[in-house]
Image (cartoon, rainbow, N blue to C red; front, side, top):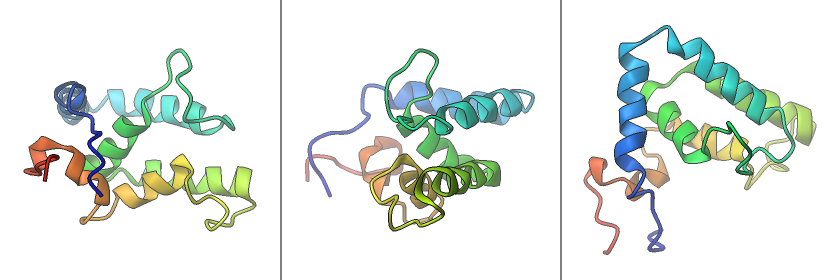
Length: 119
């Protein structure tokens, strides 16, 4: 799925955040609270002030595998989609869950993983 769009300009900053969260474990609670607040809004993908970019949440889920993020995504499915993941297809909750897989499809958008976006 190479659509010519990626996170190339933000990639370095995103991985800086990953590194910071690895080093400063005290930031985990703050980051999780930001995600909890965002996912509690119906329009979680919008760029509201202080919102965490969806792509960053997915990358953190993939890199750090914090199960709390997966729980927050499931809670979103319960809250807005009556617990039915099929109704949530296309929602941020599904993309977060997918990021926990080793073969996460969106890895191709990151140079760090050795993918060439211009195949």
